[in-house]
Structures are given as C-alpha cells and as structure tokens.
Length: 280
Image (cartoon, rainbow, N blue to C red; front, side, top):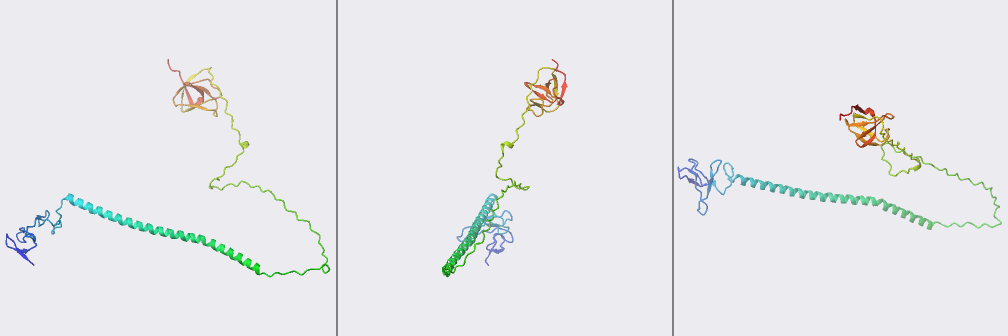
C-alpha cells in the first residue's frame, strides 16, 4: 500500500490518512488534477475529512445542519408512507377484484341451481305426455260383438233407490283469534260500530261565582287548581301559585269561590290558610 510522510514529524502514514498517526497534524489532500481537496474537521471527533464526504468515517457524524437533517428525514418518512399507501391500495384493488369474481361465480351457480329443477320438471312432463300419446296410439281397438234382439235376454230393472240427500252446509262462524302475548299487532284496522261507542258524559254545569256573602283573604299552601264549578270533574281554569294571596267567598258544598285578579272560579278551601285583611 502507498505511504506518505508527515511534514511536521516525518512519521509514515497511509496516503488516504487525514492526520499524522504520531503528531495528529492534518494532511493536505490533492485530487487527480492536482488541486487541493477542501477538507473539514468533524465537530464530534475532530478528524479531518474532505467536504464532499457528508458523514465522518470515524464517528459517523453528519456535517449537515440540524434543519437540513430534519428536512431530509421528513422527506424520507413521507416517501416511505406514500410507498406503503400505494402498496396497500394495489393490494386492496386486487382483493376487491377477487371478491367480485367470487360473488359473480356464486351468483351464477345459484341461478343455475335455481333453473335446473324447472328444466327437469318440464322435460319430465314432456316425456310423460309423449309416452301417454304413444301408448294411446299403439293401444289395440277391441270391437264388442253385436247383440241381436232374439238373443238378447230380458233386462230386469232393479228398483231405483231413493237419491241420497246431500247434507246441508252448516255456516261456520269464525271466532276472533287473539294474538299471543308478545306478537306484533295486526296490520288491518278493526271496524267499530258507532252504535257501540258509549256517549261521553256531559260536563257538569258551570256555576257562577256569587258576589254576595263574606269574602276573606287567604294564602295558598301549595299549588291549587281553580275550576269552573264546585266539582273535581269540572274544567280547570288556571293555577294558583304557592303562597299567593287570594279572596275566598262563602262555602258551598265543600268548595269556596275564589277571586284571583280578574279571574273567578272554585277551589278546595282546605288548601288555603285564612289571613287577616291587609292594612290600608
């Protein structure tokens, strides 16, 4: 192998060495044309190497800046992801084609299987009809001998039996079938006779609130319904809020008339507490 001598200490070293093995003096490299090769020192280990070599041969450290290394790494990762996606797309297309071919084959087989009994049934019917016609055509014709009047024996007619009476058809009434529990309701609509619908009860007559008698101030103990008549079946006019002050009239059938602003009606007096009149 070719060797060279260090200019500083005279030690022998290989031609491709960048430093003297004894004094660590850097060697100057020249290319084929005789021009000096630009070199750079590794920031990690300090070994001098040509600039064209991007990675230090001693510690494998790149001289490219961090931003360039990050960009190069991102580009490589992006290319790898794009390659993986392309391969996955090609594989998925091939799988879809294989599945489509399998479905087409199964559909064709099912159609052939469904059409086969029909063809066999038609052929069997045709064969039966052909055989029946052939048997009819080849069957010999037998002619009965003629009977003369003299040789004919007297025919005794038996008394005719009375005709059997056909049984009369009994009308069958179908009882309504009740569906089992959990079964879905029938889709048909039942016909309801309007005559079987009971009439709605008439609402109780509305009793006017009397203006006579003693009217007292009272406070509602809870939410109270104001009705149009002294009955729980009467129409509800409005609600009285809890702790709201109202005016109660003279009692009537366990109810008392009430005045709530401009509204009047009937309430249950047990849901109120009588309070003294406010001071003027």
